Amino acid sequence: MQRVLSWTLSILFHAVVAVALIHSVDLPDLLPEELMEVNLTEVQEPEPIIPMPAPMPEPPAQAKQQCPEEPPAAAPLPMDKTVVLDDAPQPPEAAPAPPTETAPLPESDVVEISPSKTLPPEPEPEATPEEELAEDGLPKKIYVRKDATVHRGAEARFGRALMGDYFSYSSKEFSGQFRTKDNRIISIIDARNTKYGRFLIYDSKNKTLRRLKQAFGKYVYTIGPSVYADEPVTGSVTFLAKNDRIERFILMTDDDRIAHYPVKVHVREEEVAFDGPAGRIEARLSRPPYDEGQAGAVVVHGPECADSGMVQAFTRTLSMHGLAALTFAPRGCGGETPSPAGTGELVEDTLSAFDFLAAHPSIDAGRTGIWGSGQGVPAAIRAAGRAAPGYLVCMLTDGLAPNDLPDRAVLARLDLPVFWLITGRETAKWRPLISTLETLRDKEKRAFTIVVAPVKTSREVLEAEGERSSWVEQVADDHASLAVSWINGLK
Image (cartoon, rainbow, N blue to C red; front, side):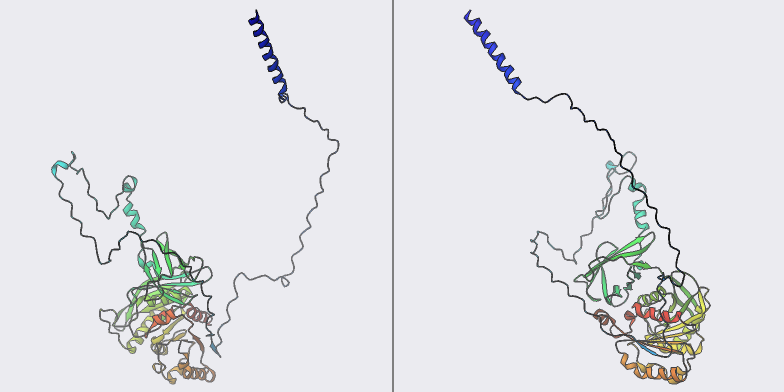
């Protein structure tokens, strides 16, 4: 009896404690709260819409000041004065910050291999034994050269090698004139057959001429510090293609903090031939990229055998500014041992070249002239006296001596517009000639335009030019644009 009473009291006690604990817990209400109801009694009126005022009538044409879409044309060069261009040196550029010293890299376990060493010749694969042939007669193992890449599947079926070589551009496509957005001209000169042996890059902004070296692949070149050294590297050039020709390249140099993307000016070039006094004359005609009926000139660079890459860089500059140019090699320069002829033969070939250019269907015969450059000025003057060109350009450089020019009587017979461009670093030696030309212009009313343009160039160009003619100097865009503007201004 006592045990039953004890169990009953224990159960009752635990039940009371459980009920007390349940009621002591604050449980959230399961029913949602009542939503507050709001009755809108006032509605805000919308803001009134104010109509825009009617446009004012346009002012009369005289009152309007419109900016011209194209820059005004430059004033023509005066025919009764001698123009001397500013030869003040360019302001020095800020010196770059000295490079921070970096900790030397830890030496690796790589062992340098001499460039004179080459890999031993690979042994030819032995004949396939008969037991290694499959049922169809083909070998079970295919031997592949170690320097080749094996392609399988779609690459092999669609001819990867054929498609890879389809856009394999010739290195001749790299040379040419390239223009940037800020009208900066970059010239890539093919001087591989000269004493430089490489492509050269000329910058019209910094007046620098430097050497290019193929780095890796076919389209990446590094820029050296001069025309005779490849290191230390001062920049890089990466050529880019579009469709079937080189269109632009990426230029990165230490002189600029950003990369430039010069676009190539595709002048039209073709190999031509015409009859001369001694037979057929092979020549090269360079024309502007567009249109027909442009002005043209026969470029005479002298009786010496000049490199075709340097001459081509100059003619491309002329064509980029809208002037067609015809050049030919003097007699005796086509063989293995060049033996150029004299000035007399050069004059005869120049006359034949002028007749051919004037009769060309894409050239305006009334604006066809002769361009004498450097040592070619004497032959150009004599040819102009015998022909009837529309104009004559005489570009006097350091490679020509004053005694090489004809006398005053020959100059007085030049009854045609003549542009005398005196350039170089030794312009003082031409003062007697300038005095003679001014006398013929002022007293005998010769149509002579005299411009003295001392060269403002860098040390690299001075070292590259050497003792011979100034073809490197003539790549400069300033002289070509100045002479072409004078030709276009003739009536």
